[in-house]
Image 1 (cartoon, rainbow, N blue to C red):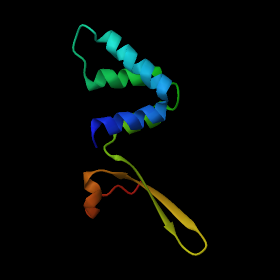
Image 2: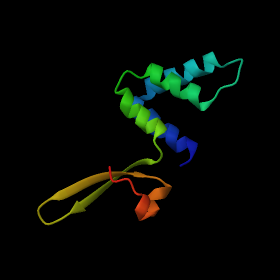
Image 3: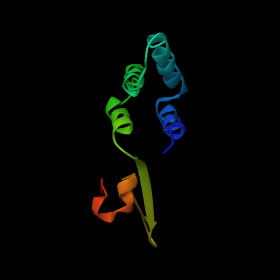
Image 4: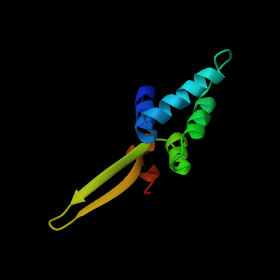
Length: 96
């Protein structure tokens, strides 16, 4: 995935206000130095008051959530897996 898609996904998850505050803090803290992804992530975690474990999984685990639905005559079964390069190799799939 491209960086802009990842940032958009994170922004939607944490909310615009939290995301904007985190980026503002990151820019202020690094205005005269070098920044990196770890510093951005730390600013996001510091600004977010929700479930930090979910946010950490979103930030650190590879891929994105892929929801699959299978419909039969009388029910719908929903399953979730992570979509990343290994998804296309059945032996490497994560069945979480």
